[in-house]
Length: 343
Ligand SMILES: O=C(O)[C@@H](CO)OP(=O)(O)O
Image (cartoon, rainbow, N blue to C red; front, side, top):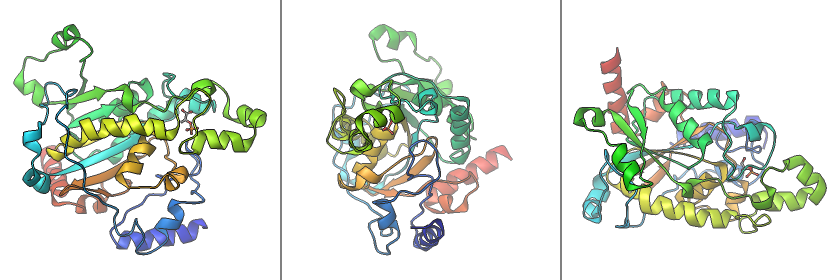
């Protein structure tokens, strides 16, 4: 589909309440602004398609073993996620793939290698922060990898509410105890940041550190595409998307959904493939559809969780974008409050 007809399609969808930013789904996972050639493009161009009728689903009841969220945010227990609460609660969920890393720039398979952002990646993270600066964030989840953590922290420097993101250290009793905050007032001005390896990029096995182009030249384009984008074929000694989904989606269900159910607004800063698997779950994509899903670096995507359902709201293009705040009364009120506080 040509760019013009895509934009026409987007116009139609926007007027039907489905906001899609072309930056969300692209051919090149890093930053090229091309559109994907299959999958979503077909879907979003069709009225009454899964997108235009707002994909939504009922989330499963939260598990009781939620344990990773420490002070200053209390862990929602099963008792607090009753059906009535599920109905009344509404929360924002922001997903953001980290900004460009030094190995994205060099076109190297990265996976679980802990590589920092480039200068461009830093700028992307700041830009992403501007775009979501009027959206409430109560708790942040990131992977254990620095590129996702840098992205979350840099994005939060732009938030108008100016709360301080604080990394929770739950790795040992001593770490927990030594990082306590003793002022109630200070705690209310903090946003807990939970880091967990389950949100890491998929482990790329023996491809980690190899150049993507050279690998394609050596093993053939098709083989490399299969390793990179098939759903259940793993790269040599690495994780397939299905394997990555198994741990990332399980983590989402066990730790993140209960926060949303209790009305907390959540931001997740993670990776191309861990987020693809979470989006596959949120949007109920098939293993065929997810193959064509590509995420750009540093583009925030907004979902509204309401009455037990996830509704994809696309990507806010700017903090002032009226459409985003019209999505729910609560977002509009939050923004109004910020305007009153800071003007
Ligand atoms: O190298 C990686 O870790 C990932 C993301 O950059 O690459 P791919 O796009 O092949 O999944």
